[in-house]
Image (cartoon, rainbow, N blue to C red; front, side, top):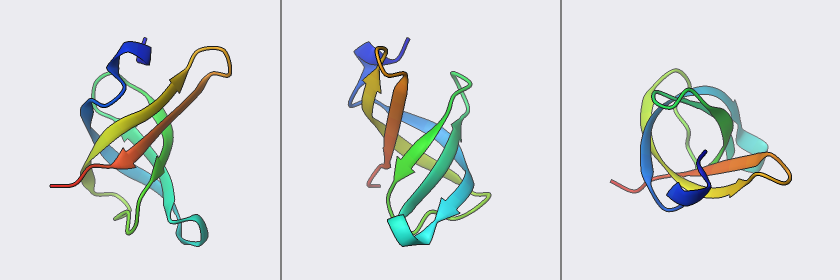
Length: 69
């Protein structure tokens, strides 16, 4: 579903952080997707803008990065 949208930005909410790896997990507003997100600092519970960096249907891996303002 997201494979053709690599490089696009999405609205999301940070639902988990991992300071050791400088990232965490986000939940997109639309479409409803939960995925890993790279970037630091990720403000837990806050709305952020993220960019899709990976969407591999074969491995079912989806990854985002914190989008620059």
